[in-house]
Amino acid sequence: HCVVHHLFGEDVVRRVREEHGDALITAHLEVPGEMFALGVEASHCGRGVVGSTSDILAFILKKTDEARIAGSAHLPIVLGTEAGMV
Image (tube, rainbow, N blue to C red; front, top):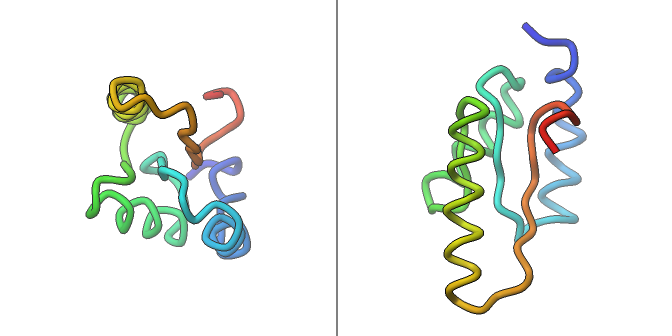
């Protein structure tokens, strides 16, 4: 249980869906059900990950490498974790 992670509830997930629908989704394992479900949903289509800090970082590195190779300069990512991860 983490107080910070519980900030990522239903309201935040609704805003992410509405305002950042094109973003990759990452979430720590400790986030509440709504953000966890969003991360799992995104992971099923290769657009997200739910895991540890190292899992999230590995996912982001992989996606940034793919974007660089493809010549893309725009890669929105939602971090479902505490601000210190940024």
